[in-house]
Image (cartoon, rainbow, N blue to C red; front, top):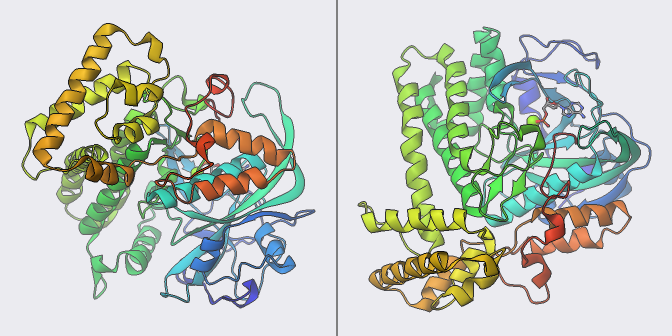
Length: 522
Ligand code: AMP
Ligand code: MG
């Protein structure tokens, strides 16, 4: 473990990829380059709210919160060996090509080699001030959105979902103006900086931008870099296997989305600039967690009319996004057919992953050959969950109890008294079919419970829980934040005294901004 000034920094991105020759922060189109050199902007009074010890350990950083470390995490200090930059990328936003976007408020300050295994991690400050990509915005982030990013990315990690991590949350001591609901009521809010950590923050849009500009040379350099660093199995003697690589990106993406569906995560803004080339969940914005199982739900009010990024649409959107990536990569291949085949294969890949996941959620294993009974079981369950307002998280935990019945499941329903006789009969019929399937599987009730409780979380960062923590933290009490982070470290294990974190959404939170309604204003 070492202090921040003595970490083994490396600068692969900066050294090996083409840079924007200009180094000021003027807004501009950055051509023929993958990044711009930038400096974070100084903030008034940095105050450390959270330093995540396990992420510090990951990069070999001593978790002692020294003044120097806090200054670095706030963007006030750059130590020798760091080479801060903002990446250039574009993206399709809500289905339309948006041109150059880029890191408008995120600044990668360093790449660090982990002492334990030699893995290389990028440290990126989000909210660290303007860059050439800030367009009309201020380069800052507010406490509520930074806190949401830190809590959720760490929760996802402990849930076992591929994700970027978060090392720290620092208050800047400077207010930031935001119009949260975009309804003409701007407010001053506390500013904050999150330090995100990932092997890479490259996105689909990082490749699309060069393709859109017909800049094959820069595109090829970036792809070469990506393969050499993150997908070495797809490059040999300088020969790139683009189709094989794209196929692997497809599989990673399908897996990530099936994991979102497993835990009830709705990303909220699946634009191609928010799709990681490593299949990690990135850019936590107006995301939300499924409370009542509703395939049509989206937390993002900016998307309320089209619901493009609703819970149930995520798998298809990922495929659409992959097709945009394929289009960008098509510059580098002679034969488009393998790319097309991969896009087609996505549907099969996702269905098979999802089916397997759902069966595992029920404590069953998926048989290699199609068992028709299983498909009926899953379809009937899906219909029941949609028809009767059911808390997704609690349902799978209660179902794991021995010999589940309507009584066992009672508290998973939002309005148990309104379940009709017909619906009760449907639930009972389904439970009988399920019990029969469990008998065929030949597992004990104890074994079923062990299996189910290891894949169905009890604690997820429910929208209203995070909102309560935001309000407490804004009021100066950070104990609630630390407590929530701690509970979310063991999402599958029942924790005595932490019952309040595993409760259905209370009625007051049903339509409250921040709980069920979020925007991109962050
Ligand atoms: P997002 O919706 O957060 O993924 O952001 C889309 C684009 O807008 C990215 O290029 C961001 O860097 C940029 N952006 C978002 N918020 C800000 C901000 N406050 N200042 C500068 N750029 C921003
Ligand atoms: Mg983004």
